Length: 214
Image (cartoon, rainbow, N blue to C red; front, top):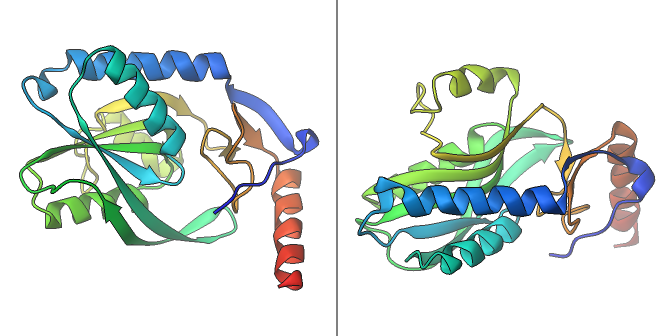
């Protein structure tokens, strides 16, 4: 599915410039390279489509520079939204990659907003009988319900899985760019920026007009 751009006037502050994105990706790649978790192992880097695709691609590039052995895989999920809020229902649509049984899997995610998607993905991996799963997210949104999760070190808090690698912690704002989108708008932006309420309304209007033409 394509992505549509959002006019500058509807975008707010920069959350991460291109330079900062590159710096964060390099740091996360080095974390993995030096982590004892992956010593003498070949993990599967599982990209959650479509949002995590740019991050997954850039992370792979940096890991290859470090001669880090891995395999790639892709998982497509669908999260049912009402505006900018998710309903909590997440379905796995498709998987492409190697056999996962007894493998160490690194889930590569663009953002952890609510826990719904990541919990569903972890349940899917448990069903596939993976040996271990780690999570690498570029952004972790500090929503009120996520604060205690973070304060416990993101280490298996209650029913929530451990998040092993985090690029940036951000405030509970709606952001677009670098794979992140709102209703398929803004995904192709090179930086990560806040989508203003006026921007959300503009996108809603564009989507409504597109639907009327069908």
